[in-house]
Length: 158
Image (cartoon, rainbow, N blue to C red):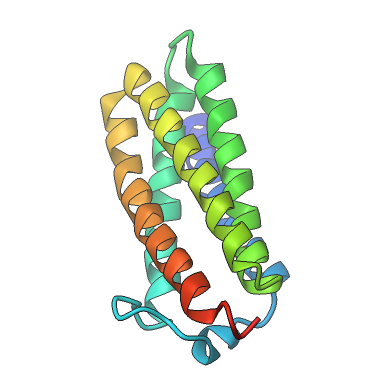
């Protein structure tokens, strides 16, 4: 791997990590997570940054594979990747920062659709790039369950 490729890989990995970190900073104090009613399958709070860090790294590697390809669909796939990353960025702000649980759930459903489209586009370019996104897709489906149940369990509180 030459120096330009290494730089592109590092940038590809740092980009989603930075976007996730910035979203966390903007969304504010997450102590509200300890105060709200949560469904039985809710993981402890310390799990989330670990899982998200792994997912962001996988997303970065996956996007790098697509970026380095010579496919004619690369531009469209990377645009979808950027849009879903933007949706990912705002979900945390909507959920944690604004405590808008139902809107956050709808936003997350849109994100899941974007992820599915992205996986399909990535698959046409590189099956490996698509497979690296599957944990993210599954985690977001699980997050949608958590988000919806938190909405249901805290409706009267807000």
